[in-house]
Image (cartoon, rainbow, N blue to C red):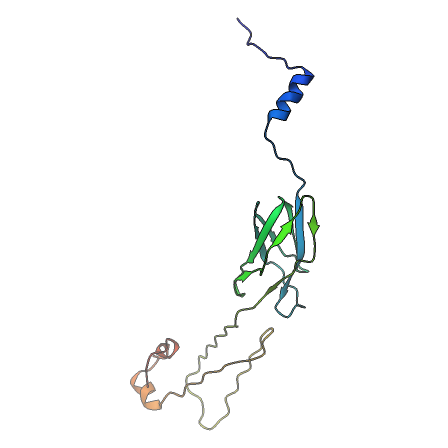
Length: 173
């Protein structure tokens, strides 16, 4: 049985080999801040912040709205966020991270999409000249747009239980 040839390098040879290798070492940086509603006061939890640059990173805001992107290569980064209920977000500008730098207070302000409320009423007939009252409770709502359709009784008698057409905006009356 033959033994494989082993090459033993001396300390100077190891140093020379290490010098000839093209290895880029860096101290990673980080970026942190808060994710807020457009008012700049209300913190948002569970929002993924995505950083794109020399390396990519993702961090999800915690219950206090705080996020932290770590282990970033030095360079310039752009940020985006996307979550159901909010308009797509892109940070205006870029942040440049230097080697080993910890950048704080980079806040992201997201805009909520307009609330969509659907009310289903299963009673199709109401007493005449009686008040019909609807109560809507919503979180962070300021303005409401209400569309009310009065359906002629003649249409209803010809098309019983065909109110589905109203939902889809069909011309029924």
